Image 1 (cartoon, rainbow, N blue to C red):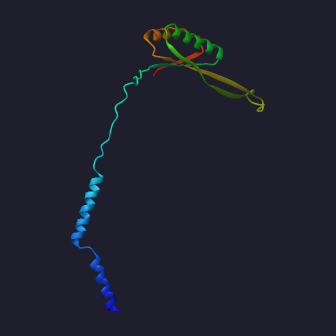
Image 2: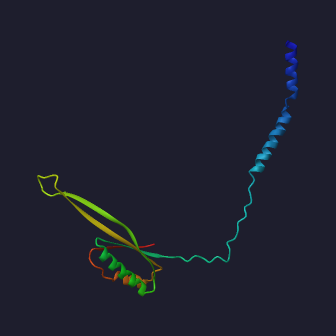
Length: 157
């Protein structure tokens, strides 16, 4: 029985690779991994000549707020008329969501807690974009007089 085990282990050692073959296999594996890491050439296409270049568009964004929508619409119309007078391209007016602020107040100061009043303030908003404004338009908009109660925010984008 012992002799059979020895002969089996000897046969296994015959099939095992020697140090030289192991070194050759390791070198081949190293060459393969180096070959995989070689840089890949990438082809970059030139942009098409037929595509026109996009113009740089500057915007004058005007946000108008008021408590009464009638006064707001009149002032927006006045702003748009001023911009169109100087041949500007106008986008809007775009109505933005109305903000409702509700307040609940006791009717009396000391008794009758169940008697209450509710008050509401509505803030109406509009947005106007003027594309590629020139200095004449900017000057005309700054010199324009609008009714009281109208809040204006101007940003250049």
